[in-house]
Image (cartoon, rainbow, N blue to C red; front, side, top):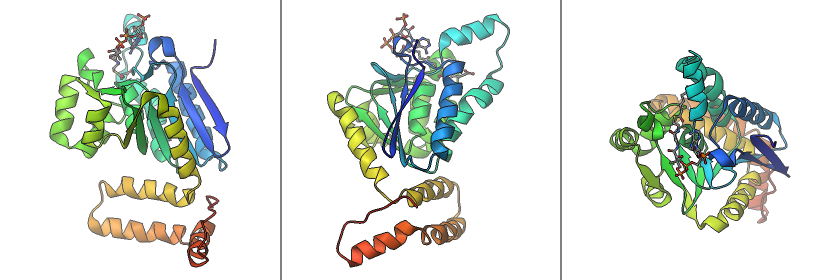
Length: 262
Ligand code: T3D
């Protein structure tokens, strides 16, 4: 039996594939544990400068495995809070806390916590037949694993409430129109489009991109004064990178910058 999470590293790019295609990559505890571990390893690997997350088969992920939920209930183990904290939060923190760009290549349906994982990425490219479902309300739950946070911030309270309360399926095109998705491409071009975008990102000043991620995330809740202070603090770090010097030299020498992510 193959691992429920696969990692394929090619140069500076790692592709993480959610791999339970017969169950639409629904998350079991083993799968979440492995995913969190792999994300931690990739976050620490200085040679990896961009991470792509995608799904095997026809789905990105159908969210929490509902067979496991039923087993938990049957065994009297319905500890949602503990389960979210121990199984999902390390995954979401792994994606959000990783100081390098994360690109979700959404190849099919992303439902429930599957949508949460996609929304935790910095950028999303979706195949045209992909879709997003806040499936939580269909099973009497509320958005979790960061979906409430990402949705309301990205599309606003009222649209977020509509999607989360109805659990209706959002097409890739609608998700693009709402600003949830950056790009939509033909299904058979998704892997190539994600690969090309990842190469572009990985060839960028990835140390600065990691700081950008921290900055924008903090900026979502900061006052202007706090944001100005944080920009200045992080610019002090970015300004001391070899990539900054290289960028300035490349501009003045009228050549393409050769960034190293340092
Ligand atoms: O503490 C906690 O854990 C709380 C955390 C909760 C987080 C959540 O994610 S809650 C939301 C959980 N997810 C869902 O409710 C979605 C359930 N799935 C669906 O609604 C549909 O499968 C889809 C709309 C995603 C896709 O529909 P369709 O018609 O394309 O596929 P299908 O036929 O329904 O599914 C194909 C197979 O995958 C099928 O298995 P089978 O019959 O061929 O053996 C189906 O049972 C399985 N599958 C799909 N989703 C799940 C699943 N199996 C277990 N859990 C799933 N979530």
